[in-house]
Length: 225
Image (cartoon, rainbow, N blue to C red; front, side, top):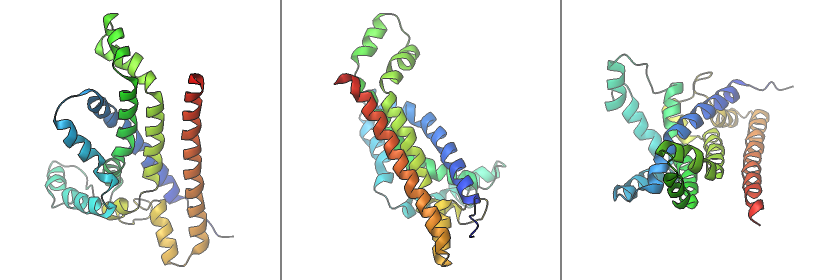
């Protein structure tokens, strides 16, 4: 019986989990600002956030490789300060994944916060709630669907990455070889049984994620009918 290599699966789940946590931490205040600001800079920021949706992953991966490499403006400075090498490392994959999956987290949260409207926040303000209390007890619960969708899509999109992780992480077993890279390797080596198993896992995972998201959205819509 063909023995399945579990290392890419474990690494992929770890990468997706770390990336999703960072994305929610960074994406929530960004989405909040985008949902409420009237600044002209909003258009520019929204365009920057959405760019990974249309950019070929290899383009983003190439520029990250240039910026984070040992001779790059960011990577070189980072290593001068004593930091570990970012390219071809797990944390390089995390940086690339955060940037590439950013719109899949920011946009659902932003849309949910905008749909909630300003009226509930204004009412809470008249009752003496602080800005933090208004965000925590009013905005977040009302935008719960957006947060759930963002977390699910951020995690799933990171699991399915190929171009960015290949460019910035390479293909180092146990360090940067994720599931998508392992499938590519298996096909190149004509190891179709391994490619079939990993691909089937990805298909099943994507299906489960969308069923989960649609079920939650349907459940949230039910009381309003």
